[in-house]
Amino acid sequence: MISNQHQATGNTIAPQIQVFQASHQGEVVACYADQTVLVTQLGANPSFLDADKLGRGQSGKVTHGGTLYLVNQDHPFTVKFSLSSNGTASSSAQRGLKATDKTKGGSNSEGKEEQPSPTPKRSIKDFFPTSPMKSSKRRRGPEKGPSEGKRRKKDEEAVDREMKETEEDEEERLAEEKLKHLQELAEKSVTDESKRPGSSASSAKACLKSSWQQTGNLMLYTAAGVKGSDKIAGFDIDGCIITTKSGKVFPTAPDDWRILYPEIQPKLAGLLKKGYKVVFFTNQMGIAKGKLRPEVFKSKVEDILATLQLPVQVFVATGPGIYRKPVMGMWNHLCEKANDGVTVDKTQSVFVGDAAGRPENWAPGKKKKDFSCSDRLFALNIGLQFHTPEEYFLGWKSAPYNLPEFDPRKIDSTARLYDPPSASLTSSKTEVIVAVGFPASGKSTFFHTHIVPQGYVYINRDTLGSWQNCVSACQRALKEGRSVAIDNTNPDQESRKRYVDVAKAAGVTCRCFHFSASMEQAKHNNRFREMVPSDTKHAKVNDMVFYGYRKSFVAPALSEGFSEILQIHFVPNFKDSQSETLFRQFSEG
Image (cartoon, rainbow, N blue to C red; front, top):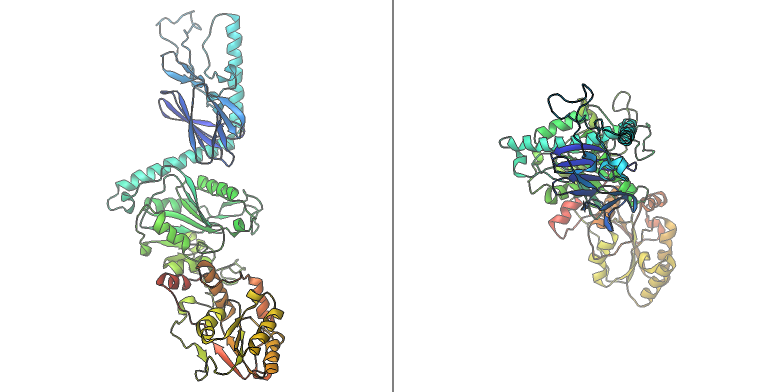
């Protein structure tokens, strides 16, 4: 990869091929045999090969005399190859001269050529020289003539300056070595695993090139060396693999992170050796809210994996919906589309995360309760064994935890629909039915299924826009002799009295249907209907609306003027098994 300082380290991988890398921008591979340079763009900003633009993950070749513009159309470097003394192609950085040793006795008595001094570490400038003077890298032997001596001295000074710059950039060099080591580990892991008899990974091929993919609210990163396996070791990222360097709950900058425990890297490496596929699953709602740029988080993920030096696949849920934990969307995508066709064995797989529902003081020195239970519920939805980071990496004993009060698995789809059972849902006489209940408590579905087909006029504030319009529509329907169903939340006496008064004025009865779903049940229903297409259109409901209803709620009473109050229970009815499977998953921690 190429840094903005245009410095890189070279790693010889074949006699006629050399790889150069620096942080984040790109990778350059020089092939002397055919005198071409392969450039792979890795950074957020594009590079240009002459006039051709390279986007992230794209590659292109530059021939002798071509120009690489490192960032956008700035920082130009020209490719130059020359012939070495043995007639083979070489970059200007590899040019060497044969020189006779005349330092002892004026000549080499054995007639042998002096071996060139060791080649210093080279930078990207060696393969894209900005001037002939800077491109010469080998120390030359003694030559005749004062002009040659001056040139040699200048060349040596240039080499010294470059070596000094390399030393000063030690931190970048170490990062580049980590990246190279990551690739080597990935290749070794793949090779070793393929040799093991009965290995689940033996039938899958390793990913050859790191890449990002986007599917709706899902970002997926597959690092080089990742391969499918029937054994998945899944991990959350924040609070599980990394924590903040600053000690703050939330990172203060993109680089405000560190590996949580020193035991993590060797533990993950051991899993890979045992044939597991290591996968990270993380919720990043900040991306959907515009608080976190996708390219910034992508870079952070790549830096984390470079530090771990391990091939890992990373799933990122960038917004609400089926991909957000604890819903199984990311896991399903892994099993169906991102595991090289290998069937996952859930009995041999595991998930680790810190959002585990632990209460206050769950361990000595751990005063704060977990902010969520989403990681534990994610594993519970899938059917995986679950551990916290402390249990899995440090060997702590299991901590106490609390699951949510509402459990969608326990909802009975055959339960009684309403109470009292002796009541009738509709009347042969003109009447007004006033609904009371949380948003997403099942009111609209119930009315359209059981009441509207019997000739009742359906009135809804989301459709008409205001309660005044709803009252007017109710008055018109009653004048026409038609019964009315009011599908609003109507949490308090004031909102209900409007319709009781209209019914009295028209000389008809008014009944109340109280939809008894709890707030947590209603919030679950709301998330479900946002994930599943429906014939009924619903306004989006945020948490403030739910809490506002709860604050305003006053239980309906006969004293308000109702002739009867029915308790309507939420009894789900599913169109297909896929919808039921999705509904019965925990959808929030």
